[in-house]
Length: 114
Ligand code: AMP
Image (cartoon, rainbow, N blue to C red; front, side, top):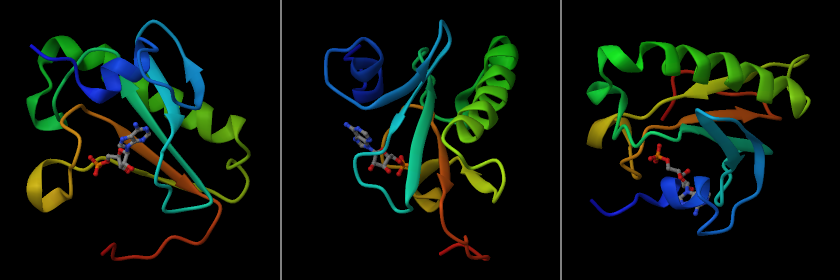
């Protein structure tokens, strides 16, 4: 299997502005930000999308969400808040088939989303 772009970022084969990493997840700034703060947090494991996560991914996914909140706090979003987004499949707007959670902040988010 070819590596996904996010696996290559995690292994430092391609550059990214990494803001947090550990054994299970890597967080880095989105290359095309749609908010003043736009970070992606992704598992090192190449789960394509949340719909394809397995029971064995349970702990890793919990870890990813806990770390998403920690990363948001670390970059100064704790006080005013932020949005976490996971796009799944074509209607969800997914463009990279490697599970990732967007951390968006630094401006008022709209509801409903576009
Ligand atoms: P999604 O549309 O939910 O699949 O989100 C994929 C995100 O990955 C988009 O916001 C892209 O801007 C972002 N992206 C794609 N390639 C890179 C890269 N090399 N470094 C950082 N972010 C990227």
